[in-house]
Image (cartoon, rainbow over all chains, first blue to last red; front, top):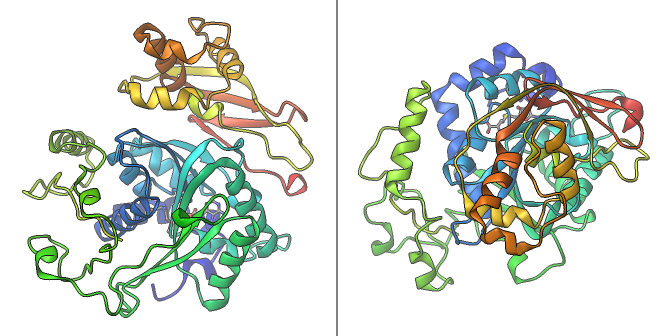
Length: 291
Length: 123
Ligand SMILES: C[S@@+](CC[C@H](N)C(=O)[O-])C[C@H]1O[C@@H](n2cnc3c(N)ncnc32)[C@H](O)[C@@H]1O
């Protein structure tokens, strides 16, 4: 990203019809957003019981991130401030329920009903004052306060963010802590300028073991042992940092979504004319548990 | 807007103490077919405010839900789950409005999407 979109115009203006379409027809963007969403979902650490959860996708845009939630069998509510982005989401027949809403005004949801929240490439928008009435601190406060209320106790939020600088990251984090969240920042591939990704991971409720922040991927000193890194398409880059977790936990089949189920969903996607990754021997294969 | 979402939505206009449930005004309702998932329904059941769901379903023209808030023994009944599923996930308000119970402010619903954006003096 050479010039930051957040600095060009308010989101509801920047993401107009043209930009919304451009955004959603780039296969590169689709792939990146899907990967980020997959990782955010993983950071939510939902119980591995195959029961669909009710999740929130904040700044859902055209539904690229939400689609990952559907693919993993969850129900989701997506909210976004840009009508144009939501129009594209409608066109693409995403399975989530959509709301036109400004997260900086607080989330219009009742208490304790949401099982987890993700947000992909959106929260940093709150750090900008797009109108004279905007005060980033107050908007972050309204956002995190309402998020804290609508999440069930113990539920997590995982937000991939592109903060402009250290001060922005601090601003986001301190707003979250003040709202009552425990958590911190997970950085994947901190040493690669290209692959580096930041996630704010928060837990609703008082600090506990489950609210400790998981490690990022590709950290120094976390080397991949041979047997852990064979035969996976992402091997060269993924360093496994879950060696503290009991072995058997990693063997549970993920969400009980079978290969059959995934192939069916992909077929459906193709019929709709969506860009769907081709079926390979990796399709529906269990990924390694990763943090 | 499906009733699952309606049951979670609450008006967050400044000064409003209880913004739930939003009253529904109907212009157009659609029914969509959604895959039945008993596990999800059983999980959601405990989060649902029954009276709000019942009234919302009636407003959208569906009168098959039990009037009294059922206890969780109904979750064993397939017949109940089917109705619950239909009310919660298949009824869809395409066009209409949601009305804040305290202020009467209307949030329009267009193409199935509630517009929950607040005016500056409502924040
Ligand atoms: C880079 S896009 C990401 C969209 C989607 N999460 C994805 O992964 O494809 C950022 C989105 O955040 C939304 N956004 C920015 N500020 C927002 C706000 N205050 N409230 C809600 N959405 C906002 C924009 O409209 C845009 O759709």
